[in-house]
Amino acid sequence: APSSDRTGRTPANVIDYAEGTPGVLASGGSDGLVRLWDERSQGCLGTLEVLGEVNETSFSSCATYLQASSTNNYAVIYDVRRLSAGPLHVLSHGPPASVVNPTNEDGDERDGPRGITVRPNVVDEGDQGINTAQWFEGGTRLVTGSGNSSVAVWDVALGDPMIHWMPRDSHTYAHRRSVNSIAIKPGGHLFASGGDEQKILLYDFVRPS
Image (cartoon, rainbow, N blue to C red; front, side, top):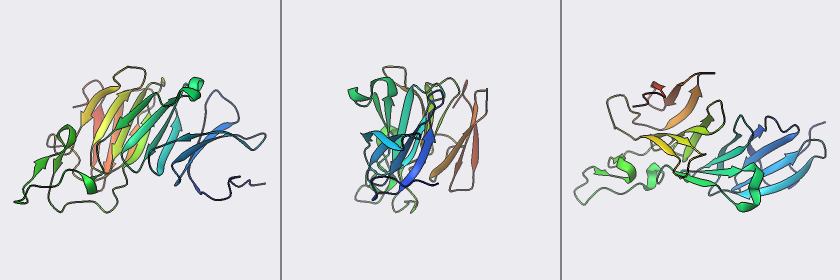
């Protein structure tokens, strides 16, 4: 029979099972918390705090890492072997588009964080921070896509996890609107991102630019 969230208050926006750890799943909600559950006892194993409403949560394929992406453009990474130590990384896409650096007094474009170009009065209503995140097979590499049109590739096993950053308007084929979905080709190094401008971009991880 279906079992409800035992908190009885917060809807679970996203859920994911941990590969290699039978019966453990994670759920994320609008209260900014990720809850770990034991399906057999139906009990909560613990809660993890995330910055903002949780849009996406998933375990790496090796079941070592858990990511939770939120509406304020952060993806929080936990090492599930050491949850009590707190987040391993807090990965940032910069502010959401609605609060990215304002234009100057003349209303001209200006550069935002990490080279994101900001246009006056161009904000996607659907910008909800990091909208999508997918793990590569193998467990440590993660691709994230944001409502501010940026796509990033990370390796969470590194001290400095950013591998590649693809901001708005970085080249002809960059996204110019919210990035809503990412798909990774199984067993390979190709991945694709889809955005609000009805564009799908294909990336070669060997040459992600």
